[in-house]
Amino acid sequence: GESVGLHLPTLSVQEGDNSIINCAYSNSASDYFIWYKQESGKGPQFIIDIRSNMDKRQGQRVTVLLNKTVKHLSLQIAATQPGDSAVYFCADSDSGGYQKVTFGIGTKLQVIP
Amino acid sequence: DSGVTQTPKHLITATGQRVTLRCSPRSGDLSVYWYQQSLDQGLQFLIQYYNGEERAKGNILERFSAQQFPDLHSELNLSSLELGDSALYFCASSVGLGGGYNEQFFGPGTRLTVL
Image (cartoon, rainbow over all chains, first blue to last red; front, side, top):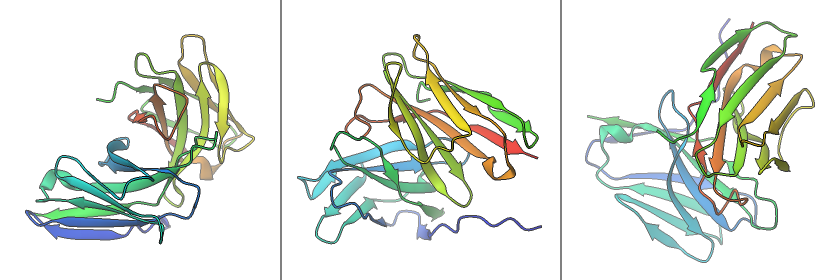
């Protein structure tokens, strides 16, 4: 029979365009946020992180924006390349002694050459 | 290559059986984390060990157990396997205790198929 899988949100972007992937979190106590990239057949790979005392952090071609008021996180990828095609997860954790990291369901980014 | 190794890469077994998944963390990392990634649940945190001691527990079933040995490698034991246990199991490691403030490096995963 047909298997039922997790229906990931999918974002299709033309090569060279900018990508914006959004994420909502629910834990008001979360004070650390991470974006991971997972390519097919591989484990998640750290991209960029941000602490709750910041609104924005930039890396190489990536920028993370944090809006604590509405518990929203976004990842911006500049000049998207075919190698950026992957599933992107946001994750959050709180530092209150319990370091469990909670992952979102992920967004699949498809880069159209 | 993250430096985290997991064996085996693939595992096919039958319902009711028991399997052991193995993880070697990056050199120098003291924390090991186990995650389950299934089609209908996404990436779920199972358990964390730090320097041989259990430090945090997530959505880990009672049929599952883990341990971290003195050489810091870790094993995840899954028993009385059910069809729904079919998933990718990832191990991650980090330098310190803090799963949040310490970057976690993920292994390539073990794909478990329960028939």
